[in-house]
Amino acid sequence: MQPVPAGPLRFPARKGKGSFDTAGPVMIAADRAITVDRAVKIYKNGMAVNGISFALVPGSVTALLGGNGAGKTTTIAMIMGLVTPTSGTVSVLGAQMPDDRHRVLHRMNFESPYVDMPMRLTVRQNLTVFGRLYGVPDVATRIRELGAQFDLDDFLDRPTGKLSSGQKTRVSLAKALLNHPEVLLLDEPTASLDPDTADWVRAEIEKYRAEQGATILLASHNMGEVERLCDRVIMMRRGEIVDDGSPDMLLTRYGRENLEDVFLDIARGRRQAQDNAPENASGAAS
Amino acid sequence: MNVQPRTQPSREPIAFSPQRIFAMVLRYWYLLRSSWPRLLELIYWPAVQMMMWGFLQLYVSENSGFFAKAGGTFIGAVLLWDILFRGQLGFSISFLEEMWARNMGNLMMSPLRPGEFIAALMIMSVVRLAIGMVPVTILAMGFFGFNLYAFGFALAAFFMNLILTSWAVGIFVSGIVLRNGMGAESMAWTIMFLLLPLTCVYYPVVVLPGYLQAVAWLLPPTYVFEGMRALLIDHVFRADLMLWALALNVAYFVAAVIAFLALLRSARAVGSLMQTGE
Image (cartoon, rainbow over all chains, first blue to last red; front, top):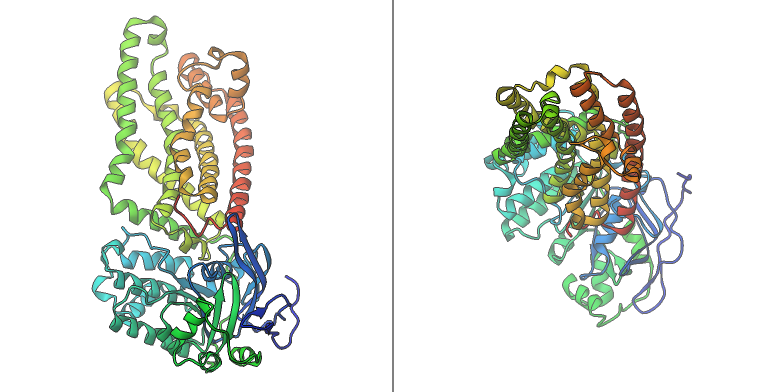
């Protein structure tokens, strides 16, 4: 890997009506947890991500928002090393993805409703297998801790396939925290949960971030969740970043009272931001 | 509201970890243990095959001087064929379990390396083979007086060559499925049948037309089945055949691993690791 220049992040400059020029380079600094630099992903049936750039500092919680087909999943997949960018670079904890992924995969983890754990294995067996894969020193103790933290004790020895969707989500989150990840990627972590459990899961995510200082990138369609958990929001539309800032800044910029309305403005192209100041992005990132 | 990140040593995991291989073997063992139909399936078909060919051999040997002399070639062939076929299936089914369970994303995002994954699948193919074949070889002794273990060192040579071929085929097919999705699953079940006529399981190579003989000698199992017939009919162990088979197997195994890594790279490029369906 080439040495990365130290220095402040260069955040994309606004190029006018609500869109960002992401063509310029992002300075990659060694202390950035995640750096996406001019990443493009073109599949056989079209472009999924079109030259996006952003960087996340350690300990930040960032939401990646956008409608269906906005490019969120592909962006997260590139960060996880599951997809190779067509051009541009993605690095996590200083390692280029996917080529150098084995340097850092033991320091990352993720949760997604689109990936299952083996259904016939019990929760304890699944956590044991993943604990060993991630090199967790004392897996049994860690499972006990997570069992207590996520209230899994009643069904630790039940096959994973026999659990309710809410229980499965809690198990997936427990798996995602098995190795105390420094970088945590969450794809709709509360999608199938009742409001009470969802609230409780959000509290656990907040607690984990507060205790571990982990960098969290979150894709969610729940704007209340984003407002509560995230200190930065990256809005995507048709493979491009169309806005970037703290939840408060976005509310001010769009003149809205909640992020859901901001999201709808952006997703439907109804209205553009009211100011053109780019400093919001850098402010949110540092 | 940024929180001071927890400092953690960025110790790089070792390149080839027995612990991660053990974790994957444990995962498959848990699965086998939890499912009696999976265990039964391992024994059922090899037992049916062996019984059918055993009785056929019994019948023809009573009516033909040559087959009386060549006692056990059918049963020996079917047992060795099952090592080849079940070895590959054992590898491929363990791999497919991850696709069926939609677990591939979890594995590909974990520190598990491709070489460790392949090693775990190779171990599981031997475990599954042992569960299926050991009872069947005992049945062959009981029903037909055919003792596969009497081959001694020759059996070890036969086994090593057949299992290497089965792994090479299993690795290649797994790469194809990773790259192309479950639409390519049928290859895992059928590819080995292409080798059935060409590797001369039940008849000598000279039976084939000249151009197919050339193809047959490119396939390592051909040497094993010829070697088995030499042992049973002429009572000679053909070490030369085993060495040829080994040399070809090493070449095919290396080629399969290279192909698997290339297909995995291609799967990352086209995004098929994100979609493990059809």
